[in-house]
Image 1: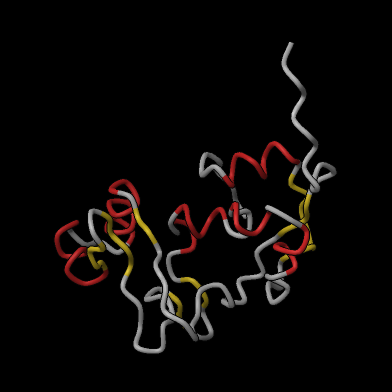
Image 2: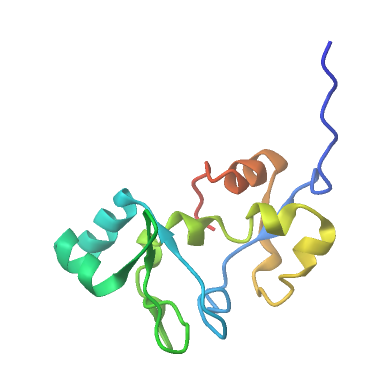
Amino acid sequence: MSETPPRPWYASGLRFTCQQCGKCCRGPEPGYVWVSEDEIRALAKRLSMSVDSFGRAYLRRIGARFSLVERANHDCIFWKDGAGCTVYEQRPRQCRTFPFWEEFIETKEARESISWCKGKDSGRVYVAGEIQALARDEGETGA
C-alpha cells in the first residue's frame, strides 16, 4: 500500500490572470527565455519570417538550447512600451506557465517572492492539478 502524497500548500488553488504589465518581461537583470523548435517556428510564422531569418534576428544559442535575445536594458526583445508583448498569442511556454514555475510554488514564501506580479492573486483560480502540470511544463494555459 502506497502512502498518499501530502497535499500541497496551494491545494485550494491559486489565483492568477496576466495583467500584461511587463514586470516579468523586463530588466533590470539579464535572463533567458528558452524556446523550443516548435515555438521558434510559430514565432517565425507570426512575424512572417523564415526560421533561419528569425534565428539570426531573435535567438542566441546557450549550449544546446536557444533563448530569445534581450534588449540592452534586459527587456525581452518582444516587449514594447505602450503595446506590451507583441507576440502574446505565440509567447513561449516559459512565459505562458509563469508564475506557476516550481521555484515559485514550492512554498508560500516562494510565492510571495513574486509580490511584484500584478496578476498574482487576481482573476482566475487555478486548481492544484493545473498548477502542478504547469510547474512540470506540461500545461497549456491562457494565463
